Structure formats: C-alpha cells, structure tokens
Image 1 (cartoon, rainbow, N blue to C red):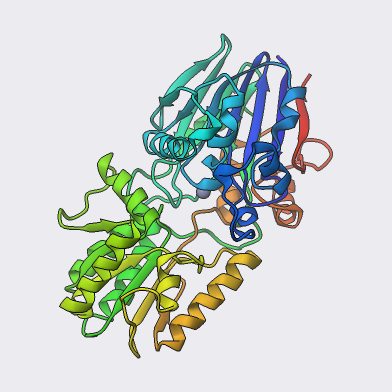
Image 2 (cartoon, rainbow, N blue to C red; image 1 turned 45 degrees about the vertical axis):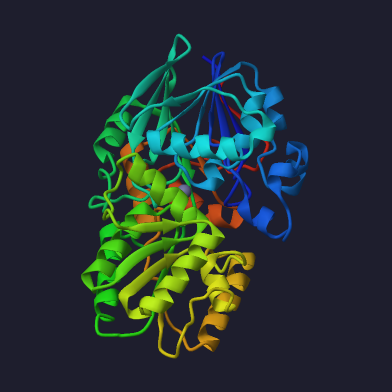
Length: 446
Ligand SMILES: [Zn+2]
C-alpha cells in the first residue's frame, strides 16, 4: 500500500498545525490549527470576517493547497486536543473536506463552540466523539486508534493510524505524566505494544527539544502552587491569579487552594468562563457549587465592585491575561480599567510561563510593569510545561522504535536538537529522518 504524508502546517513554526496521511486511497487529516501570533500582531483583525485565502496568506491558518496533490479521499479530520493551534482553523477550513471531525468528547465540544462562533464559513461536517482507547475503521484496510496522553489540557490523545505497512503515530502534543491532577496517566504500555507491532512513522512534537531532563508532572506544579498560596494565608490584602484558561487541572488547583486559605475563588474573563464551564458541564471536573464564573464585561465589573465592597481579603479572582494579552482581564486591571484597585503589596500569581515569542514577551513585559507600578508583587512561573523534554523524547523513540521520524511543531532551529537525539537511534537525515517544511509531501512507501 502506498503511504504518503503531507506536512501542511506547523513545520516552520509552533502554530497552525496540520498534517495529512494517505494510506492507499484513504486520507486522514491530523489537526487544523491557528497561528495565534500571526493574528494578534494585527491589533484590529477579526478573523471571522476574513476569507480563508487571506488568512492563509497572513500565515494564520495552514496553507492546505498541497492537499490537491494528494490522491485519495479524506475520511476523517482528527484534532488531537482542544488548543487553538490544533483546532482553531477547523471553523475556517473543514468545510472543504467531505469528512467527519473525530475527536475526544472535550475536544469535540470546543470544536462545536468554535464552529458556532464563526458560522459564516459554513462548516457542517459531522462531529464524532471517540474516547481515548477507542478504535474506528478508516476505509477497508486502515484503522484509527486514540492513545491516551497527558498535556496541559484535558482529554488529549495521540492518534495512531494502523495501516498494512505499519502504524503511523501522530505524537502532538504531550508530556509524560504518571501522576496527573485530572484524568488518566499517559498510556506508555500501549505505545510500547504499538512499538513491538511495528511503527512505520512517528511524527513528533518538538516544542521543548534541547531542554535537558524530563518535564515534571502536573502534580509538581500543584505542589508549587500550594506552597506559594499557603505562604499568603495571613496576607489581608488583594491576591489575584492568572493561568491558561484551557488548563482545567491548574484552575482546579487554584480554586482548591483559594478555599484552603479562606478566600472565595471567582473565575473572570470570557475564556475562563468558556473552558471551565464546558469542563464542568461535561463532568471532567467538580468545582464547588458556589464557584462564580463570569465572562461578559458587565458581569465581570459587577463582580469586581462586589469584591471591593465586601473586602479584597475575602476573594481570589482567577483571571485571563497570563501572556499580557491587551484585552485580557489582568492587563485591564494593570491599566486601572476595572473597579478592582491594587494596593502596595498585593500579590499577583502567574501560574504560567511566557510563551517565548516576541509578541508575547513584549505584551507580558508591559502588563507586568503596569501591575508593579501599582505596587503589586509578582509570583512568576508557577508552572510546568505540557511538552516533552529530551528524556521524554528518548523514552518515546525507545518505546516506538520507528522506521521513519518526522519532527514537527517547531522551526528549523528547534528541530536541530531532536535530530541529534534521533540519530542516536540509527535514524538518518536524507533517509528516514525527514526534516521538512510546510507544504511538502513525503512518500514513505511507493
Ligand atoms: Zn497543545
């Protein structure tokens, strides 16, 4: 059977992931993401009003024109998890393919909301839920399997396409967490089994290559957070926290420790309400019954007023804005645009790391400066990454023993340390270690 891979997006950047695998006449598309920094750099861009070709030219969504060179029918579009760099282009591109979108329940729900908020593109593909561990026939000869992985969002999987030529393992995004705060540990046993059955190709998330050691478990970030928050127990002023809205495990830890130190947690900001509300509705997390979640500007400001009236020392607002996004809640608080007033000595907890990208770094610098000018004390980087480091990559290559490897989710510089590592497994550039760019086709089996 002919096997061909189209590396469509995310092979020159971290963002707008999209890869297609053709096995005989069947094609499966993995991920259809957005490159957020390409959107954010234009201050007033409204992607929902733009044509998909303009968004492609901007570098915001994958340039899928290479798909016309791939012979075969798209049988499924498979986003691996709910981060926007993996699902954000579905609402703008999926209508071009006559295929269902297949994903885990939490991811499907986020895709559904995304499509609804951008209806003008007319995406009407069927949405099919499949749990981690599930399997589905793709045509007569191929089968799709979801292997449970751990990442900074719940319900993440690595899809595997089983073909008569061997398995194609799509490895974006994950870390190896054996003690996660929510959900099951990564299913390394299954990866090792698949490795023994034979892996034709492994496509790998290279975000953190070149970083030594292993990525700690989410339970380590939780412990770090607990230590920081318990140290503030006697403080009688304002404490504010921010993290990734989609990081439900982290939000859960923030909520619990707020209660522990005698403060009422409250979630503020549109995306805080969206992700946590969705996770709670789908029973992925159990929040206290009286946990307030407010997204709309008016209800947020009303809540801030209530906090100021009843005393800042009784509350812990968990807000958007960990990257200094100009319109996010914490940035507005820094600019003094909300009724919440910061005083000298008030604490701001960043349970996040700055995404190393110039736009984020600049915005985050500004936001932090504004908060400090009001006297805020900054507790930074209470966080662990959602991506594998070097020893995680080593373990995956050891478990899978792939015949071919395609590094992804990075630029050329980011691929280099991964190439060094993969060569230790006998893989070789120009033969079976395919360092590539966006819009290329790789024929694995002729
Ligand atoms: Zn991700």
